[in-house]
Length: 322
Image (cartoon, rainbow, N blue to C red):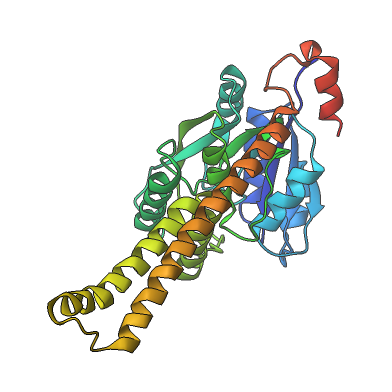
């Protein structure tokens, strides 16, 4: 039996581009079911998607993260491709990306963007992407070069173990960190990235969305690497305590008196807080380890991606139906 393949296209007011995206996906993956998830559009996006032959579903809560959360819960597929509905990605590469997923086998294939026109990125977006990607590489691992790409293919076991907690454009960051933290096999493929077609307007807000992504990265660092996060905080508190306390200790050694008792009490209190913060970090690290074990076991309930599902053991076939 051939593997089930699905394409998910999140859309909000993309009537100028959605028809071409669906046609290009159909040409590249004729066996795939193409789902267009309308995210409360106010234009003719739905009509254009239906005209192109897509299955249209609706997610009224605005935000790409909400669409991904809904789609990953609703759709059963051995390979699930997501692509933005603005026709900036080369949808004709969909076949190659799906094939690479099965050949690995990988749990995620990322379409790393290759800018083919100078205006493909909005002002500041290329620099922002590199900075945010660099931050994630430093905190979680080096296996990513384009963290914010919206063109990806996932295995069934990835989508059914991914919590999808984000609401908006920061969902790609959450996807990347999920794969890095569980060390899921991931591959990248360069894909062309071009301008939006005439009449299509970007929904990204450079500074607002960049700040949301940065906050998510810091929040994930706090949750995914609590010992590192708390060690940094404890280190800063320790430096403050030493800056306040060392002069007093020197004075006490020299004269035998403590001239500024309130400062001494404050320095001691800050040092105690630093120790407590460090201990909390190590305790949370233990909880994080248990959480990763549970996520890994949830991931292993599903089979690795394969082109022929006839040879999947019965127990795994049952897991696929959950």
